Length: 121
Image 1 (tube, one colour):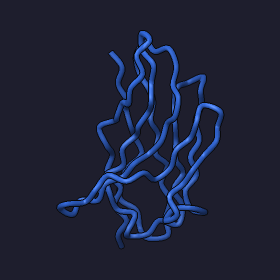
Image 2: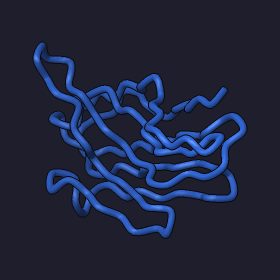
Image 3: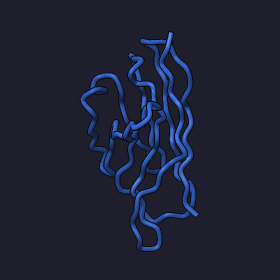
Image 4: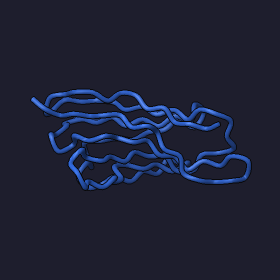
């Protein structure tokens, strides 16, 4: 069974920093892209992509976090992390780790359970 485990969320003041981590557990063949999404708590909010990284290390970011967030992955450890600096109240959301994983010749998306990030004074 393959599952993702996230950690690192919490409460931080505006301007502060947090580091999110996600590890892929289970027997897998390969991991293609990995990344982070977030979903605000307000009713009707959509889950939106924050940052993604390919297996080659190429990265993309949502415009709202460019220059503040940095995504990185360790292919040997099957982990992806995201350093979040200069946090703003509008960054408050549940953050989800996502990975596209091949298991027994079948490739699909897997998701973590989510970790809450709250930016407030």
